[in-house]
Length: 407
Ligand code: SAH
Image 1 (cartoon, protein in one colour):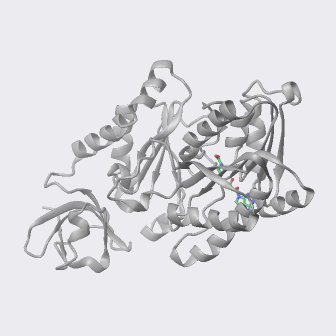
Image 2 (cartoon, protein in one colour; image 1 turned 30 degrees about the horizontal axis):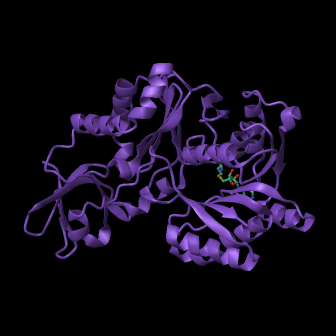
Image 3 (cartoon, rainbow, N blue to C red; image 1 turned 180 degrees about the vertical axis):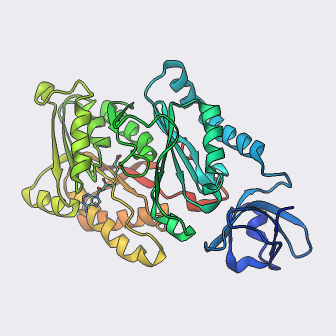
């Protein structure tokens, strides 16, 4: 018998509406003596079954719900739920399996795949797993074995070195979880090819959430740009948008990032592609700089670009930081507008969960007003289909962006 978490009267509604988090303040009492990480049963005061999930008394979020049905959460449950998440990537899985292409995409998107605290990304023949919570931590060997059975990767590598684990009382863990250790640099295919360092790179090695937007940018260049094109890729990381632009051919791509390691890996990825500096007007630069300073100086120099991509790191980590973050986004976008030739494009993003798509649009509007330019929304942007957001979990919608035509 699993322990029972009894919910305070009047606090059942979000649980019934299938929000996956139960905060300590909603809990009346606990019956039984669960061990942290155990599966517990959540009930209303009258004893009515509400949900089943895992429990961690050290976390503000004491229970994360795994199921709203009165069913056992056993190995078979984990297998079915993982299999469902994997099946949800069917088109991507088929490409990967049929052509053994070097694809990279997300297989499991935590709460939004009804597997709170668990992220699994696929890079070619390897999986990279992030365990963000104690409930996943205590089940991770079993999860690794099930993934090995379902996906048949060469190996599963763990990158549980994220700050949020601290809130769960967990320390960082990295290393091989199952099978072979991944190649130091895994080549992957998108519109162009990239090296990914899954052992040391940001997140699980690559910004897979931007995959769809790199493709949208490639399609934009193909359909909208004739002749030579200058692309500015701000916060380039390992060159995602900049190398994708080079795939278009007649392009000068300027990549700016503060991280030397990221820029060095971007340069290495150039060698995976048939790009030749100077050939067909293909040219590129990797500039280690603070993007705010670079923008300021580029405006002073009177530079002009056909396309500017602005994909900064998370500026607002919580609600208190929203105002300051908004000033940062406004400053960046104001200078970005000034650098775009009339008829050019701005692709601008925020990955701050605390800033809604609506607020982000208002901030960009504020920047536009100050720039004296005109802009039209061509597309609202978000992550691709391998990063679904459960409708019951709006917190999952952290990445938002706008593709604008600027006059
Ligand atoms: N667009 C990228 C992902 C960007 S992630 C892609 O598609 O892969 C954000 C990047 O911003 C990181 O690489 C980080 O090193 C960089 N960064 C953070 N602060 C910065 C700053 N002030 N100036 C320049 N780069 C910065």
